[in-house]
Amino acid sequence: MTVTASEPAAPQGTGPSDRNRSDRSAFRRALDVVDDRLGVSALQYPVPEHANSLGWSLGGLTAATLFVLIATGIVLAQFYNPMPEAANASVRNIITAVWGGKFLRGVHYWAAQAMYVLAVLHLLRVYSTGSYKRPREANWLVGVSLLALTLGALFTGTVLKWDQEGFEALGHNLEIGRLLGGAGFWFSDKFSVGVPLLVRLYVAHVAIIPGLLLGLFALHGMLIKRHAISPKGSAADPGGVEGASEPRAPFTHHLRRIGAFALVVLAILGVLAVLLPPGVGPTPVEGVEVTRPLWMFWWVFTLENLFGLKAILIASVALFALLAAVPFVDRGPNRWWRRRPVAMIAATVVVITLVVLTLMTLVTPAASHL
Ligand code: HEM
Image 1 (cartoon, helix red, strand yellow):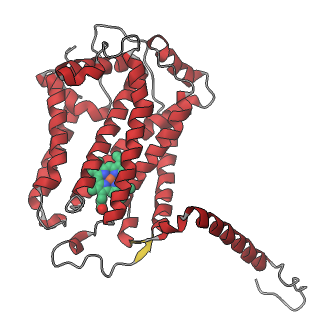
Image 2 (cartoon, rainbow, N blue to C red; image 1 turned 90 degrees about the vertical axis):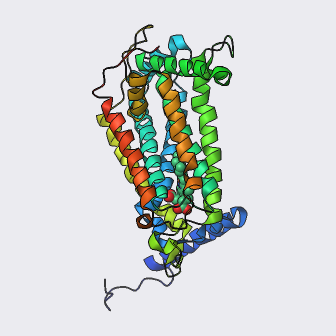
Image 3 (tube, rainbow, N blue to C red; image 1 turned 135 degrees about the vertical axis):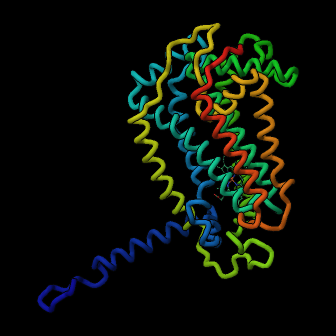
């Protein structure tokens, strides 16, 4: 807008732009006060531009879903009763009688699956960019542990609702504990007489696993900061110049990007929670095996149907041992996927096998194993 001679001039120092400026400087001053005490400006260290792409933000998004799970989980825990005789009814109560309970449970349920999907996509990004290579081998192992804990949280969460699916999941857990011999002592009823196993699995779900996840995530973050984010593409390989000409932006800019992506994920979770709220079956019946686990466990479910219960243990240990071995087997100097054909073919074979085993669950008749 142009100011004409006939318009009265605003008194000096009180026009909108002056006010904006003084608001901004008040905001700046407030930030400086906080920064003096907490040192938050240290977060403005430069990171390369490629860290802002979606592929490089998947780890941050995985962390965002973890925070959604913790926030919604804290509310759900106020209404859930882990005693076996009350657990199933308390979940029903959350859905039907607690204000917003059905929606919150839906967000928790979908966020758990989103965390798993995002962690796997993040793993595939780290693998395809060879970011597990020296000096990031230890951080890869921290990541493998984070993935195992994510699966542990999904598994224990399934048991908590204490319907047929949860009960059968626990039955498998007990059998695997038995197969582990002495090492499976925690899963036996005799470990803590008088405290139902469901209560101990609840403690694992709400305290032990989230605590370990947060602790390991802090370690993961410290190692990322120490090694800096890995370079992208052929710049990473011998002869390439490690990100020398790539523009850099403050890390706080990266956090803002992740925040924007996270809002999109949150919106999707909200829509899923409304359109596809998770159900809960009736209280369990002993001696039957009729349910399927959550889809991320289908690949071992197929193997169990084909080879028996032992296959769950052997296949899970084998997959995680394979993952843990990655940085120690593939020690070549190249990171760019085009220069790592063997590593890329091996990963493709593993992914296709897991997808085929997962889909086979839809056509393999369920057998009884317990
Ligand atoms: C499950 C929870 C996990 C969280 C919250 C998480 C979080 C993050 C974050 C925020 C980053 C920074 C770069 C990025 O976002 O791509 C990162 C990097 C990294 N993550 Fe994870 N991660 C998780 C799981 C994993 C898994 C399953 C692996 C591999 C087995 C892994 C291995 C790594 C490695 C090696 C880096 C360094 C990569 C680089 O410098 O490019 N992480 N992670």
